[in-house]
Length: 206
Image (cartoon, rainbow, N blue to C red; front, top):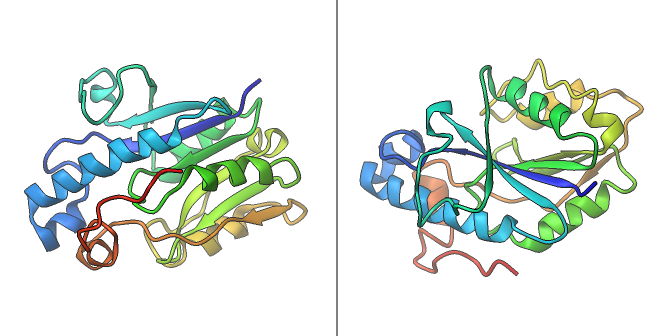
């Protein structure tokens, strides 16, 4: 079976996602940024080397049409209920018959090579993590034997403890590989530091 890459994304509706960013740059600017980053992530994430699946929240928008943002030909699933750890663990188990990775949609510096390296790492590691500058992570992936036992609790999500808490959840004998560190765009400060905030657009996906 081919590996699977899951993009976890909230619907690109104004006021729904990127609320922390909206407090700093305004609701309209945050909404436009969200749409650009979702569209970019969908382009970067599609490859013949794996199946790309969009994991959508809220559930009611599973079949909603956002033509310039979410490609119509991209397979979708609902994230379902629970906190982020429960939703990601459930997805890892469901797609864990082959290597599986999960990313968000707020990484303007993401390149397809990062994803290639993630799946390559899973040929020898049980878990791969892409650290984020805020103490979280922008990617988590698991090999099949690990994904079948995925458990991401207790974790303090959206905090500087997120990565360390996740590592503490993993069995001590699992092999963990790390990718390069990236910064996700969550607030006005990270937006200003990004290529978006500096007027350079979004990085080349290759």
